[in-house]
Amino acid sequence: MQGYESVMILDPEISDEAQQELIDKYTSLISSNGGQVVHHVADSHMNGFVRLKLALTEENPTIKPYDERRWAELADMTLPIDLSLAIVDSVHARWDAVYRSMAPAQFTRTFFHPELKETLTLDTHVQLYGWHSRHHVGHITALRAREGW
Ligand code: NI
Image 1 (cartoon, rainbow, N blue to C red):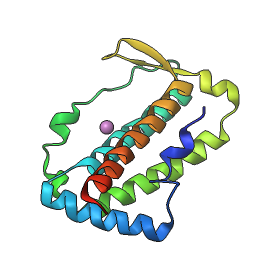
Image 2 (cartoon, protein in one colour):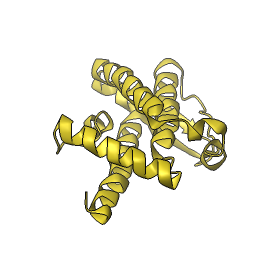
Image 3 (tube, helix red, strand yellow):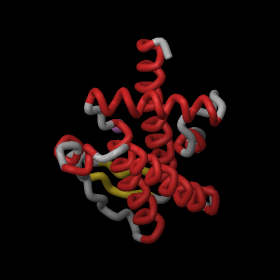
């Protein structure tokens, strides 16, 4: 279960002020580069939240994979990233409420991923999305290092 806290925050190591500054810098950088990382995280974590709720309310449901690459080509990817930051905040707040309400045994509930052809537990789900958040925060901090922010 360790790791899900990191899903909720952009970077626990820095202050709110520094975080906002980072967001602003990142916003201008990705708008000039046409980057889509924040929109991607919003898409991914909306799907992740739905998978959590399906697994809690159905017996080993088969979840719906989606084509990340083609989703990233749709028109909403050019919108300001503030919209997706708001989605991420809201989805994470609801996600957090569900996780915190869960008994340990509920983390052994499962869903079937037809693309991976694997049955995954919610314990694995927590760790995957915790990793996913850290993975993309890593992209941002690597950019920060490279750009000398
Ligand atoms: Ni990703």
